[in-house]
Length: 412
Ligand SMILES: *Cc1c(COP(=O)(O)O)cnc(C)c1O
Image 1 (cartoon, rainbow, N blue to C red):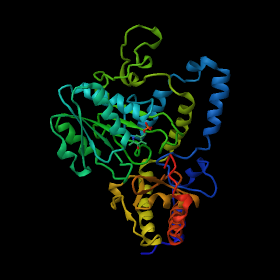
Image 2: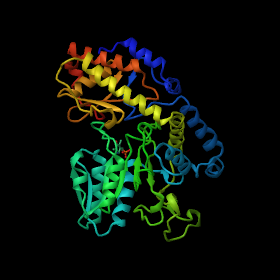
Image 3: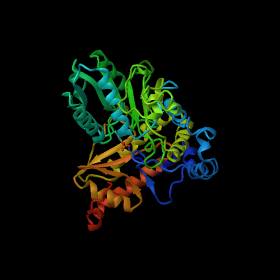
Image 4: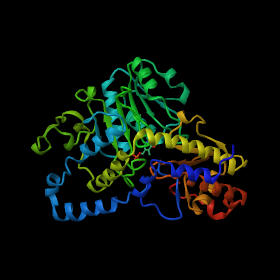
């Protein structure tokens, strides 16, 4: 069946999420397919950040920690994110970066399983997750090993020496989606804790942390939550673990009484112990705008659109871009895929650069991946047609061979 641009325009007309696009300030002439790396700017963000700067900081000064709700903001925004990831109120905190939160929760998990020595993960996991595990094992110097398995062999690699199974729900490289419920069950059957990285899930695919009985999770504020560059991240701890868990970064804001200025550390009750230092209010205010938008979109509708868009885009890439030696690197089954489509090609880097020069923005992931993120809140169906057509021209005309597209930039 041939898909036409008119078919896609009709889908846009019938799309219940289409009005949400107006909440974003997307530049003219750009098709943005990289919201899984840096989400787009919500229209309300500049005014909100300006208000925090001018009024809350400028006029309120230090009084704003109380009067403008600054001190309560990490838990307040955490409770909003909790609604997006199937977590109970009081179990999600906004803090630090994803990498730092991985360190905190991995450290707590290893301390909770003192007689076990393995951290199990996926070989193709995002490098920061693996690097943090490596660094923590070296710091502890108690013989912890990072054990890596291929995605289909993870359950089989679980045994009674695994302290924690650390997985990214949606793989950054391929978009492959793990079965959170099944893998959490398998890990628990071996007595291991499970730490889920939701960087490519929160705001994009349904997540049910409580329903899956997950132990721990981290996630990213600047991808599908549209919180802005370097937005603070979040972390989740199952309520049943709150009182037992000992986090390795014991800062004053995670203390039971920060303003008592006691010399010794006592953890705050509940998720509040996951705070370390003073929250970054400007970026936290921006994150809250993005999260509020995500809460307006029913997750079932987001997932349905995402699955339809990734399926159509994969088909269009094959239909329009034709046969030029690329292969689909994402799962063909939409149920096993997050909100992205990836192609593998040995010239992926210059091809993506040439595509970006035409205003179609995706990204390149070494060694050979062209990655296209779909954000159902603002990606239109016709965008998929136009992006695939642009890619077809880049290939047909050999544009990617131009010298300027061969130069590797620092951020790909
Ligand atoms: C984007 C991403 C991160 C980012 O970590 P930062 O500390 O924010 O740089 C971590 N893990 C995964 C799986 C990611 O995709």
